[in-house]
Image (cartoon, rainbow, N blue to C red; front, side, top):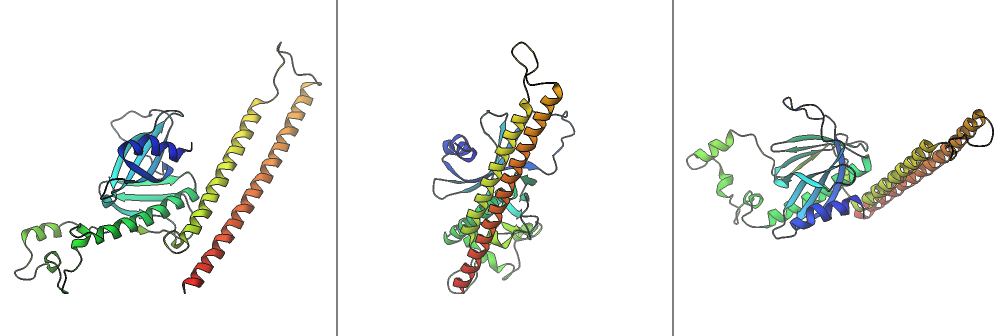
Length: 293
């Protein structure tokens, strides 16, 4: 079972919610609380998750989940409704990067994802989920988003008429003192391929990149463990047979060099596959634009 399935089973399924996507993150600037001592509860992992309720009307939620230690259960720390999400900042609209910001009504978090493809998958799924959610809210009569639409007959609703027929009332004057709140979640500095056409093909490409990155991490981890083992002594504490200590070091160095070469070849193959996947995505995007015109 992968991480996302485990989070969905432990955190969201008991609350009658369904997780859409999750991304492992770390803070770019760690928050400091002056009255608390330094240090924490040890190593932990943080995930930002997007989920939807199963009950109607469906609610779109953003949840921060943490996991302390390697085998501890996942814990829900904070949760916001999508109405509280003012802005999603992709940081760089020109290239893939792991950094992104989330701006809520009462919070501002600066995150860096475990990899750029995982961040792109998260932003892409969140964008289209928000679009679907807000479109559904506008279609429901009496919703806050639908109240901003004009009333039938070409006349605007009473809330949109503002100060006509005697000027704004006390409630309108009180609201005018607060800064304007965007009706929908705003996505800024996000690449157009995450919010435009050929989104499904881009999603496949990013999932392939995530898979290759995980394969690379597994290879590096296995190499590190094998290197940490090194030559072992015999059962009675004697040196391994085969000559002096110099020959043992020479053989270990040669084995390390061979492992490095194999790792380099695997990395070259991974980069080549990533380039081919990107070329395939670009070609599919051009074909989609050609047929759409």
